[in-house]
Length: 508
Ligand code: FAD
Ligand code: DLZ
Ligand code: SF4
Image (cartoon, rainbow, N blue to C red; front, side, top):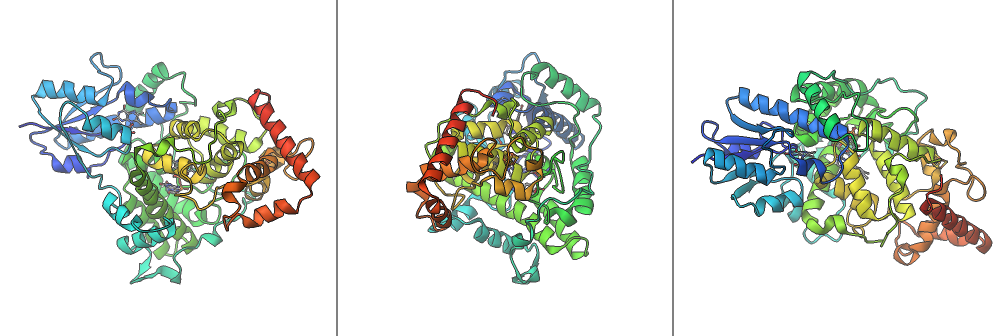
């Protein structure tokens, strides 16, 4: 009996479990551009265009490989608008009674498939290094789920950067070498940019017509949209940027959106690149003497450590994870996250490049936009929806633990043992943003004081009961307590005034 094989927009991998379970000579692959997936948040136009273009090319590739593919374009007259709707429609047309799928990366879609009137058999997504069971076994009975211990297990499992049972170079982690401030200039011109071909142009026209009211610039569109192009970007990164990736991993610079980052999260998350192929390319560069250990180890840790760990947390914690609000934050997300003007140069840089590229690198996401939202007490669900919408690499399994967990501490401390907050001093140390800012990073209070300086103490003060016994925050509370009472009062009052101005929509 013919079966349908569902391939979602972030499952564009030829080794996908659903394809492996299917019979090419009998079964029918279903791929669909649908309004429901394109609008559960207001995705950045570049993200939608990337996914649709990559889906269309992957469908062509499957056809070339001999698969029967039923592909629905967003504008097709009989498009039902949802994944399950498309499965029902195609099942009727082909007389299929059930569907083979690879488990989606989001609880919402997993439940929709479970509740589908046509039975859907969901197979594990084997494109990850750790299975759900492996992560659950690792997490069981641990008091703290520290990424570092999980990462070492993944190093042993994959054999990456191992000399027998020992880590290459004798150390598991070279992170302390990876915190250099921004360099004087960047000698890497960024990711490989691809000129849109006819398939991409058709998609760009569609997205322009249908999503012109979504935040962000559609053009110029330069993303890779198939495996071969994504591999070219990986090769370029390994050759030209990897050697300095570690050194400047945390640096931020005005007008430099990419620095030495790899820009492959879009591709790896959509399935165009395999995490092991990426890590093997990086390890090969290290073994050949073309990249130092701090770069190679730092990079591989992001993929087999953080990426896998975040996925593990998302599936371990369950469907309510995105609604958690451990610090009871309720402020609305300020308009400057959607492009309204702000005097904070760091925030305006991070948001402007997000609008332009659907990309910001990790420290911009964590220590600028994330840090600000946390200090200002923004409702974490609104923060989550923003990140899920604006980044082209954002799918809930990876975005939510980064935002709800790592960035907003809304999970109560599962991902992080302390909140990622900082005053302006950190941003000043790791960037050249403050030089171009209307605020003065050196000013703690008074006219022009950097809001991060004020809000930092406001956060510490309002969450004292929760954090004062946290061993990693005790020193900061001691610093606060050493300030005289008048000064403390001034800081808190100015912070409160600043937040009131923000709430009133003033230019801040
Ligand atoms: P590089 O800096 O070159 O890093 C290499 C790769 O490591 C990335 O491509 C990515 O696959 C992986 N990686 C690095 N850090 C993480 C991490 N914390 N979690 C998972 N993978 C990681 N990453 C996403 O893929 N999707 C998201 O929606 C997402 N949202 C984030 C939200 C916040 C608040 C924060 C702090 C981080 C988020 N990240 C997310 C992680 C990280 O910022 C991006 O993976 C990275 O910026 C992608 O750019 P790159 O490919 O140039 O990465
Ligand atoms: C993100 C996305 C978008 C914008 N559109 C589609 C689509 O039209 N069809 C599709 O199959 N997938 C799309 N996706 C990706 C899904 O939302 C993704 O598979 C789930 O969020 C699970 O990760
Ligand atoms: Fe950001 Fe403050 Fe520096 Fe301005 S002075 S760029 S607000 S950290």
